[in-house]
Length: 303
Ligand SMILES: NC(=O)c1ccc[n+]([C@@H]2O[C@H](COP(=O)([O-])OP(=O)(O)OC[C@H]3O[C@@H](n4cnc5c(N)ncnc54)[C@H](OP(=O)(O)O)[C@@H]3O)[C@@H](O)[C@H]2O)c1
Image (tube, rainbow, N blue to C red; front, top):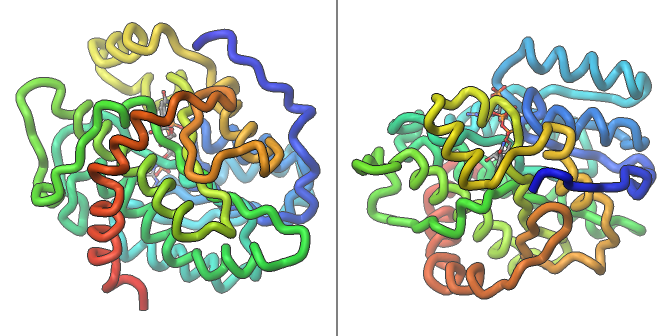
């Protein structure tokens, strides 16, 4: 993984397109918004919980692109009431949304439940993003109908999805297990991210929906782990990459010609499309059920 390359000169002029990045307050999300700000977007929305960190991202954007309109939207993905509020704020403030990076996430945190009672990785990484996506779908579809549009919904997943499973009757439990439980819960939530992008792609063909793995990146997600977990990441992923390198797959996902990207696909860094067999097997087992579960659970938040 170390030694990744991406040519930033291939990032196109964003020509007034409107972007939304979740997790723009830190890690790769902050690096992505600062980089994309240099390419003439019409407006950048980014989300997170940490207001001080949001101010820092806004200052960094101002330093590289003083004229780009930037809006921080506070939102706790593990609390669906705040996700609904965030979506309503975005809908009230823009009449187009071209690029949505569902990127924020937590990894290997202790067992717990979200405000709404879901296992906390599943809540933060999947349910919060699914509600935001559902609320924004009419705007995304409307943008896709505009002349010359190129609307992309890009979910951040992880290689961890390959070992994931979705135990539907227990998604509202802490899902504790004796060995590596926190990693299992993370992998399960990242399976949901990968599958949800596939399910969206099938149902909303006007939008280009797919998922990307950034690599094992030296962000707070990894660096704040306890020593043995950090070691686990570094050994199992055969090394780590810098936050800048950690943006490469996302920047590729925004930049690559639309017709070169497979609708619903999963991409490793940078722009690598591995065999789809594993994704198809997971889709057969869990895809439709995940869609139906999510639809039903989110119904009450859609008014
Ligand atoms: N780093 C890696 O090695 C790696 C590998 C594979 C996949 N990924 C994926 O890449 C994505 C970004 O990871 P990262 O490395 O940039 O992590 P990071 O440095 O920990 O940043 C995580 C971002 O997510 C936001 N976030 C966390 N919990 C949230 C919540 N409850 N509500 C709203 N926002 C929340 C944080 O903002 P606030 O604190 O302001 O809320 C922060 O902006 C994640 O989806 C992760 O699973 C990372």
